[in-house]
Length: 238
Image (tube, rainbow, N blue to C red; front, side, top):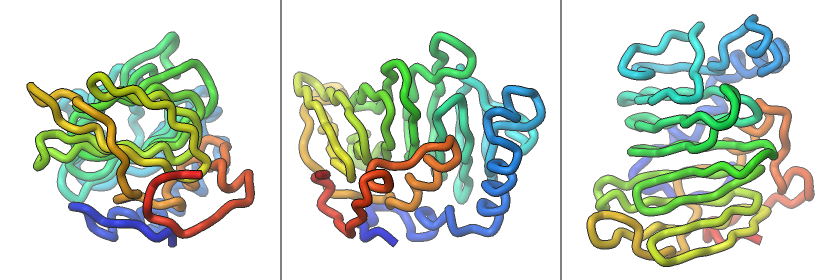
């Protein structure tokens, strides 16, 4: 597995793609043609649900679906993997986020992470945003990992796993072009908002996680398409 640093999370959280339950659910998802079955009304867009997960304050059931406009919360030792349109998401335990609606019901315009962490893979399309307390990322087709560190004043972490991303934190602007992980901190400024962008190591996520999410929406990561696969932890990208 990809080398990585752990900061405040456990190895088990990063090995979700090895769980028998997920592998069975992912195989069933692919066999049912994924989002095509969802659009036809034949399937839920939830690939896997473990533990205590709520949507808009109500417990989420496996046969239900997550829609744009929903607010999602996961409890301890809980996780949610789902897809909307050409995007797929893995919400880690103890997380809270909002999936804001774009031009249509199946388009996510903003993924607003309030606490916790989420791994995401996005197909090509109009520019969308991932927002955390101290940074904003404008994305198109990309893979990303985002985490909010409440113990550090909601300092936000963002990794552009692959793709082109426009990052903002306070007055800082950065255009990130990466084919294999380029990572940043959104530093905390006055009033708890973003103050600056600084470089960061690759923490709390792996190549394999992003690859599995991309596979759910019929995508491949940049390193898979380019034939590049290295073990690295500094997060500076190619």
